Image (tube, rainbow, N blue to C red; front, top):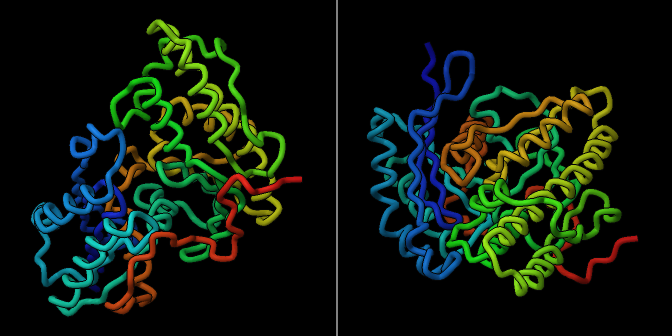
Length: 358
């Protein structure tokens, strides 16, 4: 029987230091042998957000221990590892450089191939860790740093249908939480507060809801929250504002996803209709339930990665590494970190308030 490849994945693009060992069974289905994540929440809590310098120092302090723990837990010996896959971008360059340098040095030391991975590609194919989904499929990637609709055609083949022109959705959640006085990272707490409030109390703006195709905008919504919170005096009013914010996000995603469905169908005639939601915000249960309901309405199959694979992790990096290893897509050891690495390199850059839509 042929030996199945064993991949070490390393992730350090922001504030999680992570390592994973991945292989596959005789049917080609991935098997996660270990998936170790060290969060830096306590490091950044007092600052209300990620401080790049502190994040990089934490990665340096922990990465050796995290990788060793992942290898030990997997039961794999170092000389059995076939390739090392590290995140090369996008992300904070000082953080990316830690995992990338470690991965290249590790690959060199054991004389095994090195594979540079696009962090977004990790999220894009993370459903394959558990679902066995086939290409093509529509992806909604919603995280702290990214919000995009993508037509996922194959490994390395992506067409962006829409993106945020300002804040990412996860960033909007975290900033709103901070405005409401919730400790970092406050985004996940918004959903809890929202369950105690009246979602119809505040009429919040829905930027570019009726223009811009399936592009997204959240900065104006955040600005409205800043103005309203000045007049809030009770906890109930805070709960009501959180509930109104949650409902507004759901309404934006509902309409924009319907537009994305139409765009996806134009590009994939006579193909099965599959919709994947990935990234940290995919853990929001109310958003999940709303999108599942929409998929039923539009006859789409809905796929969500397991919660443990939604936020930043190294298993998804190892998954990309496994796919690239099988097609011998290796990288040189002098490859630099790329903080603005894109999935669809042909897509227009839309970031900023100067974007105009007809």
